[in-house]
Length: 188
Image (tube, rainbow, N blue to C red):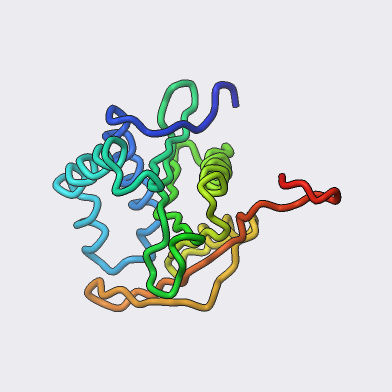
């Protein structure tokens, strides 16, 4: 695809990011969440709150190690990823980061945008000194789990149950993003 890449998000991207989130959740989570929950988190009021949240993430992140990236195709925002230091109490936030979210607009799926976002995230986190990257995903979300497994991710044994009117189980996945040495002992 011509003119496709990843860049840091800007305040002006917030509306596009929120719209992508709503569309991706409506399509990807419709069979994963209890009735009514998806409507609440993707309705007009929620979409406005997401716009505000993503504008703040782009301009005033909680730390220099938190980032919001966007995938672009011909200057159109088509996906996004957010990451920061891991917050789970059993993880070391100095070495372990969390992929908070990675979503691609369903209208632009399967064009490599998710892979580009994942690679850019890993590169930035590696530069920041992280060696491990984790994320939480719905246990029943086979699409996300398959995508991440193809990139070397695996469950790390942790799970949690969210109360969404009924229990919804999530599992934590992880991957090693540490600097690897070549046969001559040089980092690459």
